[in-house]
Image 1: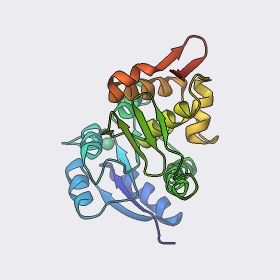
Image 2: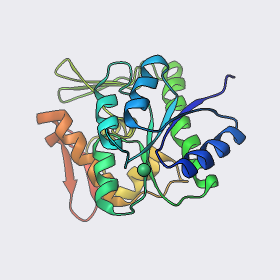
Image 3: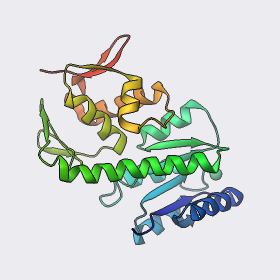
Length: 233
Ligand code: CA
């Protein structure tokens, strides 16, 4: 199997070096960019398997980079892990709202970083291998068609671009319409058990999903004291 390539976007030299050293040691193919401009330029020439994106960058900052990647045809589904120096919830929430797949707060241990990267990459691989097993498992509910194999969602025939995490949550809820799930159950279903993600992060993902799905988004109901469910009719 060929090495997975990771683009590290980080303006602080120390952190960039530390991160790339550990990634290379863990068997990844690593490229670095010091600025958002450099990152976007690099991606035009080579699509990485994953991007580690610092939020605070000079010039085009991390959130701008994330936004523009999510809008690009070739780049919308590149997994992105945000690096944030500030642990404030607002930054994390902003990052997830922009479509980052995960976030890591600095300072972080190399071990945690690697395991998060592997988990995000694994989720992506799972999506692909499900293509073979579940290619007929297209979920059709309300005006919504979810094709897990192709990783596609359509509302009224129009494709909607979702992040991996949003897709996972939508698929999870839509597979069992009428069932209410707790935030923790949703976290476990979409991320695997090694993740520590706040219930608040799930709320943000749901918020973003509802917005992207338009009217159909209203079918994702908040169940007070429990969590969320997809209406069954
Ligand atoms: Ca920075």
